[in-house]
Image 1 (cartoon, rainbow, N blue to C red):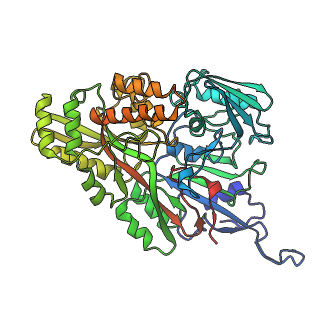
Image 2: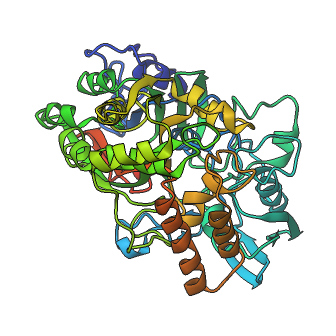
Image 3: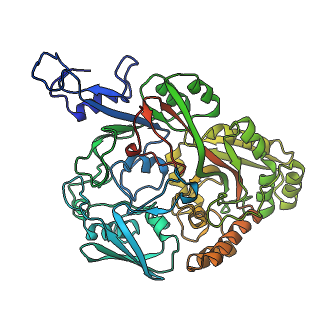
Length: 539
């Protein structure tokens, strides 16, 4: 690394955070000398020769976004990249201090809110919020951002179907936005904390700017460089309205396969990695410079059976797949107990979960009988899986396919598909564009059954793969009631119906398993968000 007195943060990030840095280079996490470290001969230096220290962190995930537009994708790796610079309208309690508080809406750019009636939400905008462009954030910007996320403009919004049944948001004065709803949308506050980000209207509408490759948010870090498909570099934003972060900047990068991801952590090239597979956990734990952080996540892993295709249009065949897969064996042997079995789309502890619905037991004889009853004996099916996106995803898919293949009257193999290609097929307009049978994960930052299910079961939703009028009725009725007990009952009935009809092969709740440098102080969140502002140098 050059010891140039003019070395600025941008250059520092380019050198210190290089994905190809050799082990001998300075680790990005840690203290890096400032511009006074060239000779130390200045006797008048009131620091007495002590270097000012800056702290940077590199985070590697298994995927990198195709776009930086906040409404261009709805995937956790994308949010983890862009949310260093962008902010949600409001946010949610992490539950670190009190697990019962997890998911509770908390102020961000929106500092206060009130329902003025069942279909109107009033938002109060915080004073003194500045975009990275230097312009003030206004109520007009917030209203515009909500409308843009809702798909009200000539831009495709991948979050329009899940942000809530919004008619329009409007700025009614300098500090107030009214959100007009087409239904009660009881989870609207949770939705506004999860989907859509605050954008500057003038900047976004300027043809000279490109939201797909540039970031102009209100967050604590501003983007200094993008290497498409590889990394985004950030430095601290001096005019951030909130607390000054404990890190000076960082890099969000990608290591597509889990093995190289762990290798890069062990080599000191990166400081935090996602998705450490259970068989590599001991390698990380044995390294004195590293640690493993693991905790249950808000993500469920399941095998989608697309009912646009035979044989998955048949309930008996779908039930047979659930009986065929030995989820408990997969959890114990492949995931090393870093998972919990599931019985329905909504996780235990989330609003609308039905505690009376049990997971399918492993019963190969029952599976074979149901396949015979379905009329699809002799079928050959393929289970498609991404690689490196979820914990041991390929191993899990291979095991599930192998267990199905062990049945006497059906054959099954697995196929690896690049994650972004798979997502593009899932979210295509035509349901038949998606594979007939695929492994996927679904994180639910709202902690609510509506989001756990709406995208997969409602007509017109981007990833609808199962058509059931009764489930849709339960979900739509729940979306238009403000009575918590009534709404919970409706959502529980939707979950019970999904289990009975075997809409998916219900697999497991994923655990988040991170590898972390001991130089970095960080307490991971259950909602899978990775924020540089929540990191700092270890004591």
